[in-house]
Image (tube, rainbow over all chains, first blue to last red; front, side):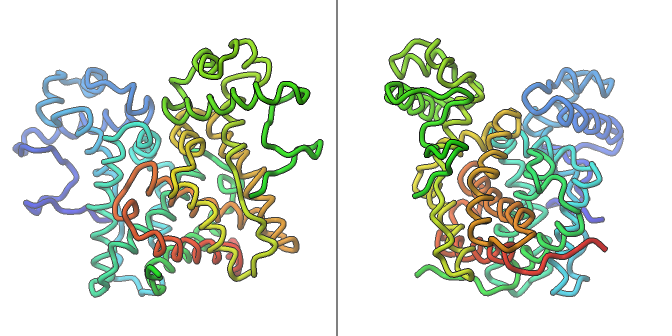
Length: 209
Length: 209
């Protein structure tokens, strides 16, 4: 398991923009974040309120605002915290697609993806949730793939293509529950999606005519 | 351009569940459908009302209900009408993936996809919109691929995989506008997505361990 590091080199488990807080605030910030993850997952983006999160965490709403700035930033923090991608630099290149598929979809399959599910559910109608998807790509997906393919000048394009396959699968199987994707055998799905992601990572990219 | 046929063998351009109406009602039904497409596209699923659609079409709200049954059915009709997939049986097998990608994404690229965009935007939070995505798969995507691969017993699984890649691309590029997918060169995108779809259609399917 791996978390991205912020500019200060601090592990991104507890993240609060834009100010920094001392270690004494860590338990409160963690409690707020856990309460927010549960609320966003259960009630969705729109219905979740700072007041409800504060009550669940046993703190004053002003403290939520002080640590997280806004509902959008708090939401963003729940999604960032949840990202985990194994270190792909240690995986043989021809295995990276399958491993990436497993790392990304495994959390959904095990039901550990509530913040991402809330983000994906809210993204089409809430620009701040769509921005969380973009940040998750910029700060987790792209860096992990860049480290695995340091010499590929097209890695950003490739990572975008990887995301189309990965998010499309998560959306159809876990959020919209479209058949036959929703009940497809998981290993069959991982093989196919993993091979498609591998293709996006390593096959020649077509160019404009 | 091709439309699916319903059980009566009537072309599915004007569709009204569950009753059938005579040809005299066709202009009114068409006006309602056009008004509904515009409203759903502009205001989204939630904010669109039967009353507003009726006013736009210049008919009584009761007529909308009579012809389309409910807001959910009306929404569904706007999505079904918009589907068009060329006859893939005339395309060489090794070209079907790319052709399918072009047929599906071309409408989005040209901005002709408003009903699908409304459906995809509404689907994560409105089960009736998610059902429209499922019906569009069942009645357009799957039959088109079944006709192109009549002997493949796994075509339903394959078609589901095709949809993960196709909808993931549409969502990221056109609905969420996630970079670099949103501004990726269109031909590069079609090549990569088309090759991925081709893989889903023709590569060996992995099986469970």
